[in-house]
Structures are given as structure tokens and as C-alpha cells.
Amino acid sequence: MKIQKIKGKTCIILKKGVTTLLYKLKENYYVLIDPGHLTDKNYKEYIDFLKDNNIFPKYIICTHGHVDHANAVLYIKKEFKSKVIMPEYEAYFFDNPKFYIEKVVRAKNINYESIYPNSDLKVDYIIREENEIELEGEIFKVVRLPGHSFNHCGFATPDDVLYLGDTILSEDIIKKTKIPYIYDIETDIKSKRKILNLEYKHYIVSHNEEIKNIEKTIEKNVEFINKIILKIMNYLKSPMTYEDITQKINLELGIGKSLLKYVIAERSIKSFVYYLEKTNHIKSFIEDNKIYYKGNKEFKNIKIRG
Image (cartoon, rainbow, N blue to C red; front, side, top):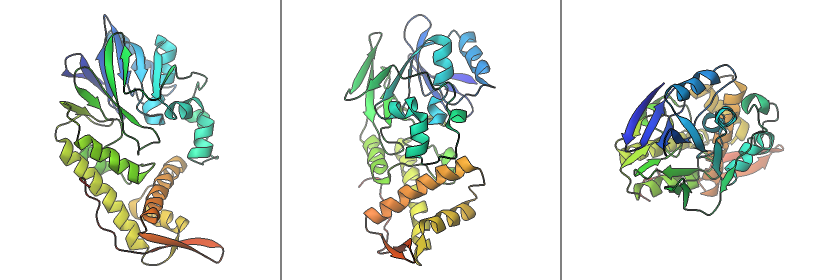
């Protein structure tokens, strides 16, 4: 782990998994944005790292409630008595992991307690309609960027640094990713286009360092989405069930046999299929008591500037 300065009082903590944004308030009190994922085995190393660098998180902000971004909250809050801030709905899922796993992800066979231990710790402040939040006299802007998750938000520090969370992936991460996790394709594309019209000096994403060329990176993200869509459209030259589509993508991309990875991929594939059906690129029909999908019209690549 290491700390890298971005501008003014804004830094990032680079560690395996998630890049955490760090903003100094006063004395040794800080705001952490997306602290990432910790376990009972490795949390002490991270807590010691914060203490060794005189970082005492007074507030923790999460862009969304996914485990790889918010799970560490449970350990940090317990150690430092930090106040946790999260967007509406995302906070509900975080506070109710059993509901999220069983009703949203729809995976009853996954043990939610192994993903969100100590889940009795709750969010302290829920962001609803606010466009900014004030912490110790410092203003953090709320930038609504849904799509990757239901109510995903970005946050801008007073130093004109925007933390984008998982709204976009860095080019390095795209190369390593089998399929992007997106809750709603149409909304996600709108959020990516929204970023193009913002004018911040610095952009930070969750799984890498600072993005130097934001337009090029967004273009690569949209190309990635187009690639998956074209793959599905190619499959659907002949009728297939949703299970057939999922199996074929899993075999072709090598998603693996991990139940959790398979469930996450399946949830994202469902978003792609839903988007294609909603935009009338594919149609569904029932045959032999099964729902089949088939291509309906030619798909033209999504453009970053719609």
C-alpha cells in the first residue's frame, strides 16, 4: 500500500483491489471514499497502515454498496468510530445484505455473512436529494452516476478532484475483465456521457490511478460494452434460452467455476439481454415451456456522444 498525492488535500491510497480517495480535513482527521474490501485475516494490516500514517477517518463515503467498495467500512467504523455516508438505496442494500443477496442478486445459495461480516454496523447518513454535503466546513459535490449499481454516485472534493467509483473502468482493468458488471445498460451509458460534459481537473476511478484522458477511457468502456452486445447478438442468430446464453459466454470467456463469480456474471448478462430486448434488437417467445431469445434487428454500435 502507498499514498499518492493528487492535488491540495486530496490523495489516494493505492492497494490491491480498490483505490481509495483520501481527503484531509483538519489535524489528522480524514474523509475516506470507497475503502474497499477487507477480511478478518487482513483488516489489521490496513488499520495499522492508517494509524502509522496518522490517518484517522472521521467520515467514510461510499459511491455504492458493493462488497469490493464498502465491506471495509465494517472494520474501519468499528476501529475509528467513523461516520458512514452512502447514497439512498445503496445504503439500504448495505444495511440489509441478506435482502440484497437474495432479492437483488437473487442468489440464495451464497452466504451473505461471509461477504458482509459484522453486518450489525449501519450507515449513519443517507444521501437523498442533496447535490452536495458539508463535512467540517468542507463541501463535497454529489454527482449522480447510476448504472453500474442502482444509485451509484461520484463525489468531488474541494480540490476539484472527482472520484468516479465504478462508473468507468481504466483501460488496464478492461483488459483483465471478462464482462463488465452493469445493473442497467441504458442508464450506465447516460452516466458515462454525463461525465464527458463535466469539467473537473482530476478524475479517479476505483480500480486504478488517476485517469489522464477521460474521453478516451470512456470510449474504451463503451467499446467493451459493444463487444459484449455483439457477442450476444451473434449467438442469437439462432434461438437460445437465457441459460444457454449464460453458459455460452461462460465457456467462451472462461468466467470460471466459482459460484460467486458465475452469479455476478449471470446478473450482468441479464442486464445486456434486457437492454437488447428493450431496444427491440432481440425478441422473446415461448416454446416447449421455455423462454427463447432471437435476434430481431441489426445492432449498431453505441456511440459515446449520443
